[in-house]
Amino acid sequence: MPAATALVFRPATRADLPAVLALLADEERVVDPAGVEVTEAYERAFAAIEADPRNEMLVLVNGDDDGEGGTGTVVGCLQATYIPGLGKGGAERALIEAVRIRADRRDGGLGRALMEHAVSRARARGCALVQLTTDRSRADAHRFYTALGFARSHEGFKMAL
Amino acid sequence: MPAATALVFRPATRADLPAVLALLADEERVVDPAGVEVTEAYERAFAAIEADPRNEMLVLVNGDDDGEGGTGTVVGCLQATYIPGLGKGGAERALIEAVRIRADRRDGGLGRALMEHAVSRARARGCALVQLTTDRSRADAHRFYTALGFARSHEGFKMAL
Image 1 (cartoon, each protein chain N blue to C red):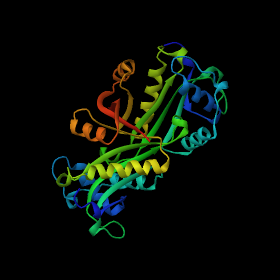
Image 2 (tube, rainbow over the protein chains, first blue to last red):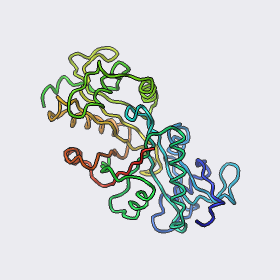
Image 3 (cartoon, rainbow over the protein chains, first blue to last red):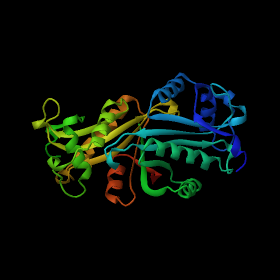
Image 4 (cartoon, one colour):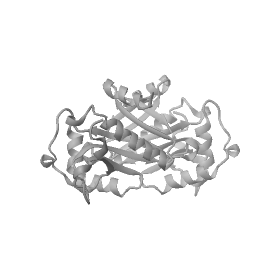
């Protein structure tokens, strides 16, 4: 796993927002954060995540260049939502969304490290379960989550409004 | 759809908690709320849902006997979580969990009415998407959600902690 010693996992700051939006737009090639338009709607959504004690956007940053207020190069992200509920003896469950590793940094173990970090945060918080969904066509993602210890136990349904 | 005129949809109150826990324990037969143990952990979890502006436990109640503070007979429930995010132009998405209709009231359209109510609340709130997962073995549930307009587009992964 290259560069494992220099990795930093931390909640995103406002300064990371263009880089996170670039990651979310990055399907197959690296998107330059400088070219991303940070709309007011994205500003509001990020502020909502940051202010909510049950939501966090975690980023994976090159530790070498990370400083106060978030100055490092963001190479991965995911969002965790901690959901209170009446199943599982009243414990929270963690929902993971928006998992991304920058296109030029894939296949080096960063995704695994980021997910393991998220799972250990959920465990430390007392969550009884971690859950996520992936597109049905993403066979590579299915292998990835299965290897991490997830069971493909459910069908995921979505409806656009 | 029998008794459609007498249905009330509302957020659960503390008085509904035993009935909601009974519904969640009800797989194939009606569970008497009077026999449900409301542990401190369930009290805390319910208080967390009630206090969180992005979570709500919705109940479907016989309107005939519903009064101030929640005195009606609860025959259905679901939990909605509204998740802020950086996809979908910064719009929230709604996650639906814990959908239950009391065993002796199934197959009469109540589940459909409850889900349609939840979807219209999500739409009114400005959510871009409604999502949920069901156990892979529940073919009846898959038909139910498909008929409501959901696409079975994702695989659902879970890991117990």
